[in-house]
Image (cartoon, rainbow, N blue to C red):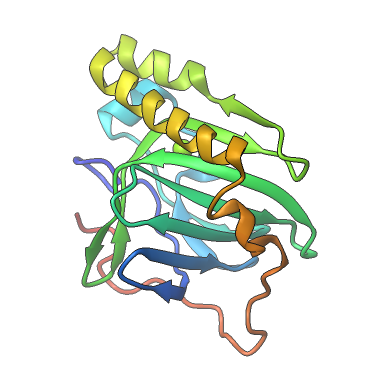
Length: 186
Ligand code: MG
């Protein structure tokens, strides 16, 4: 979410909610609310202009957040359960609310292939956001430094990468969750 508007809402199953870490499962086929195709230009984002559509999630995503971190790590699978890789999403530390967990995306991301090669993703989105004043230069530098800390973990292959999450499977008995009323309220 952005301070002025919810961007997307995704119903999930809590896999872990410990003192150190939270892990959430976003199952294939889950009905989410989001701008069509999750596609919004940076100026539209800054202006808070986007419609919501029902978006059926494809692929599986386990979102792991170490409390305090300004990023979370997604473990990504195809609809068929094939492991695709890891995604480091730079974002505000999660805020727990009565409805779930909120965060604000920092636009810059890192993708990690199953063979552990990594690359920055969407550096142009963050640069454009700084250009139009959505984020400051200082914020962008901090986001990148957080990414560099994540890259150190990738290169050292430390937690959460070395914990076998790529072999994790959801309980087949879990129902698909749906969004609670009030998901669109800030
Ligand atoms: Mg992101």
